[in-house]
Image 1 (tube, one colour):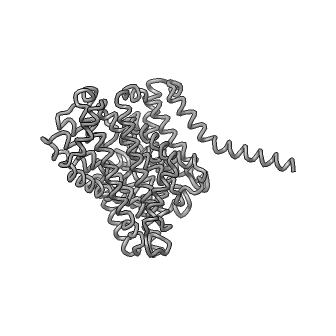
Image 2 (cartoon, helix red, strand yellow; image 1 turned 90 degrees about the vertical axis):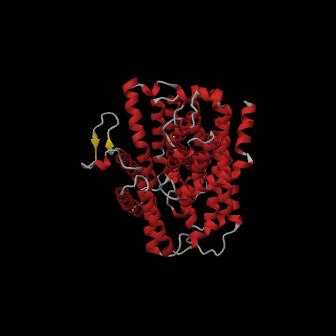
Image 3 (cartoon, one colour; image 1 turned 45 degrees about the vertical axis):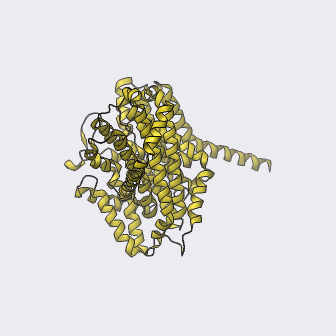
Length: 501
């Protein structure tokens, strides 16, 4: 094992590999910055190119590109409120408000450093769990996956600002939209209006583009000025440095969210969007300043980014150890392994252990290099937010159109994005939470699917079928009643104090 680790590190740090590392990072950053394209599409485009190449070189190159995509995605999410990829959506919730306050440098610094720390944590988890991966993966069945979805939905009670009634209405509306298309259990069409386009459901990227980007574009066009609402002539390195310091000040949050992200990544098919919202909800639930979330709280930037990058280590674990792709991008990595003649699974853990550790080293190196490049450019990137709206509004609209259209080269996706842009603008005006809508939209289908599978296979008592599902159920209950319990105790204490007085 030690010899294989050494070979993996040497393979990636080979001087002949360095130009390709830089090229892979730049490709990944550009793909991440362009909304809607995503790392999966980029890897799919490059898949035919690697045929016949050395597996060590080809897989390292693909993994480095994939690692850099998330860093590019967070840049547009923070600076423009446009998700560079769907897994960067939760970063918008506090990253973009920080930008409007003139704190883009600090937001970028904290997000990039949190991403780097999360990636390091995910790499360590991947390396540590490779020998014992099988029982961990097999422990998660449909009841556990259902409870994970329910845990995410339960954050609706935490993440909605203002009226709790409006937050629940938004979450319910998101779940309703998630039900568009085929019913998971019966195959019956629901809410399609007779249009074939809706048979497979509403795509996530156009919805997120519309909900978060277009309302901000409208506001910027109406109010004029720049994105940053403060007058500031110079972006200093101290701003970026403050963001980096914030990560180390909140090191326990980084570790907790990285652990959550890595755990979610291990479970096949869950994905980065789920990990982002669950870690964001956890951060708000455990914060001493929950009222600041959604208004530009740095913890709301650190949590989703550390969890998002840590989940890649978990996703690679199931892909390499069992040949089960942990995410959409891992499907392409799995195909690349087969194209190169390497069979993933237990056999790979024995015969190609040096290649496994090469992939682990490439994942960590790709995240570290891309984070460093973005940190060096953060001050200049932050200057963009002080440009006039007359320059930025057309640019952001073009990004939204390209991002929505690029999902499936379908003009109807652009129309859906603008339709949800109108919905998002109305929700913003009337103070309905777009965050809880997205949670319901992302997790509604997961919850329904695994509920039906669990009910069919284990019966009504499926929640009590395993220790993991019971623990998750208890965590959901504690999370829902915890805040109310604290308020109840506080009220009782105040009443007792008044009686004594």
